[in-house]
Length: 351
Image (tube, rainbow, N blue to C red):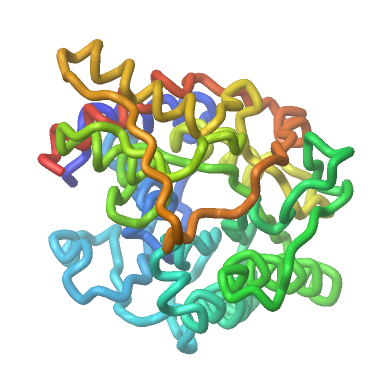
């Protein structure tokens, strides 16, 4: 597998933090394996086999016929080419289901709100039914901070059982957030009715090797500017506050949730409150990284009179990660460190 030096370092960190070398002979079913989260799950299990001979089976559900075709003859990797919204029929046993398929690009949310919705709703039903049929040990759904909406004025930190913010379900852009909420409700229902061990992780803004720089998210736009040796273009005042979680830290948290969380605990926030930062300061961080590497780039503000951007519209509301930290989760990478690693990977891959 083409795993970069940065990715290998990340994966060894994930393996060591979760003692995954103690896991043996399991089967992982992963949707969205060509995306950021699903791809890191795949590479982690694959490298676990390569380095520790753990004999894990990996079943990948992909839509593109040529995705990971180089592993089609690997005995431990099985590739199924289909859409997650279609019925899933496989004969293999399945121990863990990772449902990471779905739209993450604001551009696509705007163009295909129906497809965005169905991947999170019908796709979740199909993967839950598979997990139930196979009596899987754990089912993990990748949810989002967006389910919380815009934070009320008296809320800075969102907790899993706390107050939700405002979210207009008639706004087509909220096809993403509303379908994630619906999927979470499906998990709760399957847990209640069938006793299944299901987990949903509400991710804050997550980035790292594997991120697509053309997906329309603000961090992707900044990275695209950086890699093109262009000034960092900010299309707003940049006052909105976010937290950014490096992918290795996020996957570390997810393995802790899969392996250690009680069966009756379903919803977990995954974020890094120590990496709270405004959009403007994120842009300045990329400028600083550029200067460290001899690039002459600057921050430019270009606010269009009418914006066609589909960025997440929320200006405040930070995820509290206390619940997952109680499982032993801790983060390793600062925003600057994470983006330095991401840039090095992208440059190595000539992206």
